[in-house]
Length: 284
Image (cartoon, rainbow, N blue to C red; front, side, top):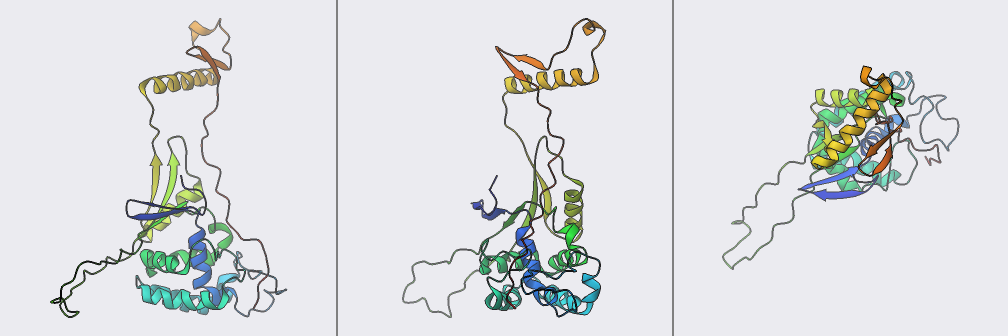
């Protein structure tokens, strides 16, 4: 699996394992005017990276009109790279480096963020942003851990003769950007309640979001050994049948010529940690 903030390129897709960090960055940039709106009492010091009411049920109602207008602009942007550039670009140029909760200026560059946003589309992102605006403290965590998007196609170049004029050249239309989310689980992992709720919500928004189950490649002998250990562990937990009543079951199972201590398989992943930025300096 890709490490946090490590970008990889596979099969025409670029991927980053980020636990929702890019979506939180897009939320912060797209709703920057609402986050730093002049609301009485929410900024006690210039060193805050977010208003005091973010994550409470007071944040959204206090800025309802402003948030609704920003979300309407997000919807209108749809999958247009130019429209997303006009939303994200000015905020990036004016505030780059300023601390804002959830926003990372170094994880990905502005061109990648614009393409990712266009790949999801305005309708999908507006619904995600609304969910975060209503209850940021709950929904900033639990987002799918793997983000995938398609990079721009390479520039097409080739030989051109003197008969080749600009008017005669017909370049193929570039495919629209695409972005998707995956919650990665191994055979023995089980999603947390919040992870399941996020994937269900994202799918209902029209987002390409799925669980990605990774299978282990094991030989027949390795599978037999694993099943033997798991069976013995189950028997040690629930008790023995009549034939085994006279024999004490130990916590060690012999596998071949070696002994391997029993290990309980993890029932679920620990709920992924919220990727909240520390409260830090914000220059207005």
